Image 1 (cartoon, one colour):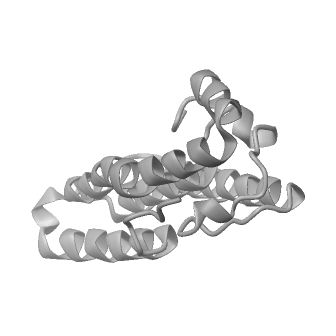
Image 2: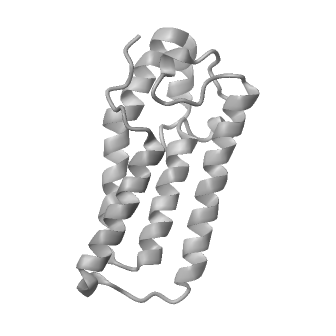
Length: 153
């Protein structure tokens, strides 16, 4: 089975994007904004993102399968329960919510470009190769799951 073409762990990608978001907000302060209740939004997005991602990790651990996104061919079980009934990619979804929370924290319109780039980047370079590997490994079971549960939400 082919390994994903994206050899940077998704968490590292998010950290790099977060750094670029901060640098962009710092370099372009004219795009800053104020928003009443921003702190509540930041906290809500951040906490929701961490919880959703952790629920994905917990589900994988319970199924005794790999959490390593760089080696989907090592998966020993197709996880379709828990948070995986709502989204096929809760860990990536959680990281997206954290990025959105960070963009809101930075209060700079340009920071929101990076979460918008994160979704197609992950779809193309990480999720599609993972899905191909899972389809090869789990066949009709994965195809059935894929037809019932959306990639993100």
